[in-house]
Image 1 (cartoon, rainbow, N blue to C red):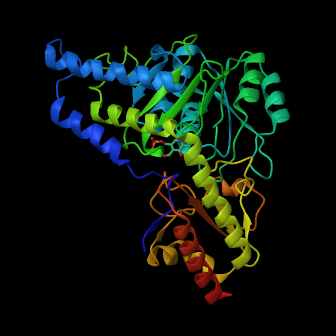
Image 2 (image 1 turned 90 degrees about the horizontal axis):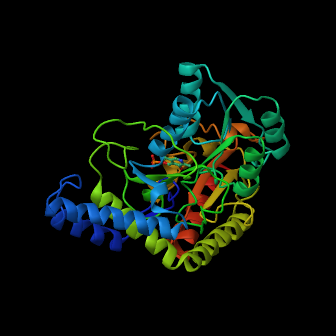
Image 3 (image 1 turned 180 degrees about the vertical axis):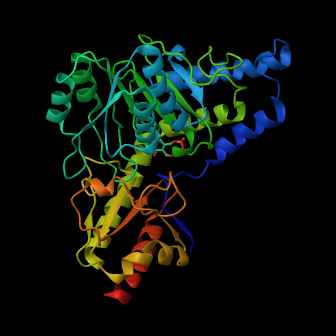
Length: 380
Ligand SMILES: Cc1ncc(COP(=O)(O)O)c(C=O)c1O
């Protein structure tokens, strides 16, 4: 049996998405910037996609800009806020995805902006008092960048509370929503969020395509210059099959979101029960064991210190189970997680992230727990 439990890294592409992309690849090759019939036809597909994405997220098409993925959407926001909106300070957390963290660090070096880190508690939740203290401490134009859900430990942040507080102090609010778009319903028009990043391959769409939401009250300069596509916000000939695939994937996600959630939550509950029953001393990193405070797709398991831990991912891989130890987004090897490093945990304990999708089954959960039990028992 081969089991894929690394859906926070990327999800399998839905067959309906492949179908939608195939028809564009074979039938709609015109350059959307061309004014002839072939071009106009492709252009209309892009604009229909933009309208669909905007409708699903309760926002306006003029606020959606297609990008090459979450990383580009995050980079555009941070860099353009500094270079175009006069942002002099970024408040973020040490457990952000590197698409935000490394960009903020780069901008601090390049432009000398101030970089402040909000405290996170022992479960990885944002400490709101710390955010308020930081916001109050300076009058410099500030961008707050905090993710909606952490890709490693699944913590969910309260976007409403963070955005409201940021705005009270005149700060802009950006959220990397890559792990929750397509998994939760969002009404972007009523959320106090200025910028948000989404990525298709996290919700059964293709890789290399995503979008940036920019609330209509904000205008930023582009990151990528050229042919003025995406209303001059993102130059480069559009990834039309990718955009069509992403739109179909988002549509499918919304068609039966509650059904998918119930199914995946069932898998996560089963895994928690089976792990507790079979692996002595097992616990869960961050808030991922708390079903109310974490992504239903992510379970980050902490295995008691043992010699088995060094080769855990390798041994599970050999037994047919693909999982991740930290963030697979940033590297092929497990170099140690900057997120887990912020939590109060025994560094000798093992950490493995199971992340589920609607295509996983109860049998796969039981199989993975059985194999993990075998591996840890040999070294006990
Ligand atoms: C939270 C988060 N942000 C950003 C990204 C980067 O998105 P992309 O792969 O579309 O560039 C990822 C994963 O890859 C992620 O999990």
